[in-house]
Length: 243
Image 1 (spheres, rainbow, N blue to C red):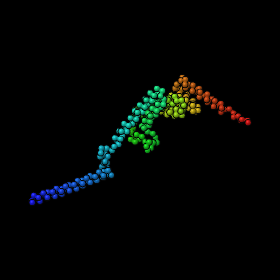
Image 2: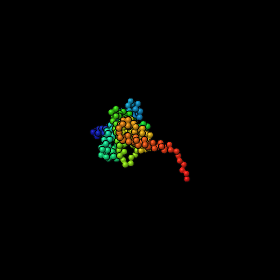
Image 3: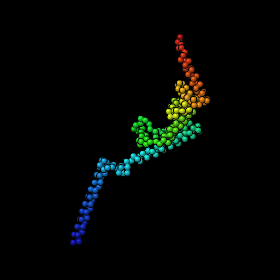
Image 4: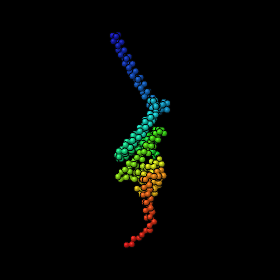
């Protein structure tokens, strides 16, 4: 009987111990949860935010990833340009145009475009990542080469888009004002667009750099002939048609 009573007491004590132990564990968990919630809601009270407690603010990691992505885009742009040059040599002009455009698209993801907002903000503006001088030179030279090569491809087309040729030539001249090919091609574009004043201006600038270039001299002659004809028409008195 005594042994039976002793077993009952032991079971009751064990039950009480488990109940109180579980209650204590629940209280500890609630206290920890409250502490974490407080840190998340009021990081200044705990001294550090949860992100900091986890090992940093995350910005450094994002910045490193952005730098790697920027470098990758620059290298891809160079690769597309090289592929475009290969297509041009093989006289695959349409394919070459596509490659050059893809190269420029890669560079657009790196360069800071003024006035961009929202989804247009690029990698550099998101992270304040700065390009190295070497990267800047590589981007500029790749961009110039692509626009220069695009004009060469367009001039090989059956129906030349002279407006686009003019646009690309002016982009090159903005960055490289003494580029002979861009001057000459800009002169050709303006000539075929009927803007003879600008055509003559760019052709004469090209002549200064290459005085004996036969193509430049020929287009200067053609432009001056067109201008003379236009001037003669302006000087002729208007004649009334008698019915």
